[in-house]
Amino acid sequence: MLTYVLKRVISIATILVVLSVLIFGITQTLPGSVARVIAGQFATPDMIAAIEVKLGLNDPFYVQYGRWAAGLLHGDLGRSLITERPIGPVLWAALCNSAILAVVAFVLVTVLGIGLGVLSAVRQNGFLDHSVSMFTFLGISVPEFFWGIVLILVFARWLNWLPAGGASEPDAGLGRLVSHIVLPSLTLAFALIAHVSRMTRSSMVGVLRSQYVRHARAKGMSERTVIMRHALPNALLPTITVLAIDVGWLIGGVVVTETVFAYPGLGRALIFAIERHDLPMIQASTLVIAAIYCCANLVADLLYAFFNPKIRYG
Amino acid sequence: MVSALVEPRPARRKWRLPVTLLVGLAITGVILVLAILAPVIAPYPFDGMNILTRLKPPSAAHWFGTDDFGRDVLSRTLIGARLSLLMGFGATFISFAIGVPLGLLSGYASRTVDEMIMRAMDVLMSFPPILLGLLILTVTPPSIWKAMVAVGIVYVPAIVRLTRSVTLEIAQEEFIQAARARDDDLLYILFREILPNAWPPLIVEAGLRVTFAILLGAAFSFLGMGAQPPSSDWGLMISDARPYLEAAPWVALAPGLAMSLTVIGINLLGDGLRMALDPRLQAGKSG
Image (tube, chains in turn purple, cyan):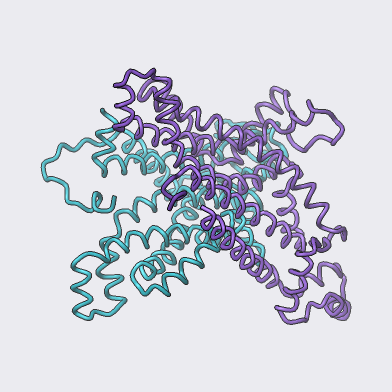
């Protein structure tokens, strides 16, 4: 197990280094635009040239990358070209906002997704099963930004129950905080609940047909014990992988959902930066998102190994 | 899995089409026809503005109402269907055009080549899909064509992996060893011997990818990184409709429902196809 963990950690670290080169390389192919953004609309070629020299934009690629990477390792993400403030604190605040959203959505996905999947597998082909499968079909087919807009229309505009977007001020109290989280997290979770419950259902259906479940029933165990103790742990193995993949979707969804709800998180920060050609901000936020994604994958791999004796002892 | 798909079916097996397949076929067919005929049947030009008819609710003259430029939402939605399907099939085509050759090579060629290709795919896959697309789109000014390429590239790793695993299996077959013994050249073996046998699982995958591509492409347009105004791309239409959502909800609802229906149709078609092709699933359903 320990060798496995080490191997995974090393491979993730390598990938992160490659990613940082890639991100820096891709964004750096916008030639001269950094200087132009700083100098503004009425810049003369001389001014642009002066800024390029000042920022070292004419240095070879590896020198510039080295400077950037060294800064990163010292916790310095650089300064935004637009606001001219250090990126670190701004990004951290955005990250916290996104994390709240993502965690709430993830809990919803895990609880509802697995719950619905197990229920519909146990009552296979019953009314509940069919309703759930209808619901999950909608979940994987309706784009999340449209689903978000429908929620805004119904709950914010027509019923006036919840705010249509934004986030509450830090001292506005728990009620306000929650009211701003409900719609975005539901939007974020909807498609993934569908995904997870479909997966859980199909693996649970398979497990319920297996020999050992039949055996457990034959021994006269209660249906509850059979399902909770014997079937579920085995059925959850593929679900763990799916949950990991879904963390990736969640991060993608965060970008879209935050834009729909004007929620001040990481995704919106990235879109803002792209729209304004704020190069350091694009680099930093992309790297942060990619790093989170890699770590989520790592955790999923480890959990999978932990629950799967074939790998644990392999 | 693969062998189950390529095995010849018994000639006189009772052939019952699943309902899902029929419904999916009907929805997809109607949308396809509407998309093809869109320029002919659209009552107004998709970018024809009219200040006098701004934000009018659905009526006999404008079935789906009008938007804030007085443009007919029905006409825009119809033309949007073409863009959406184009995005779905175009991007899928791109990811197959890049992914299938790489996958074949990776599954058949030497270990070094395989390692190189697979590690490169690992790096691509370690980006969340939408982020990879955004990164590609950051570099140049947005357009629907670039969004299509970006969506295509995002799904390349999945296609490479699938093609590789199918290729690995086929490469063990006797006819491949025979081809190798004949000293056929690599390209011939890859594209004339292996590829024709790898199609069935790839086609099933393609069906799935089309809906992914439609959704991701629309998301890029929604974020302002894909189609640009005055295009009537569904993602862009929904995004543009946000400021007056309460006054004129139909402007966002029409393209949103159209897109949902399209994806539902294609998904049903895919599910139905899988059921029809895989007897085990059919037995499982009725049993």
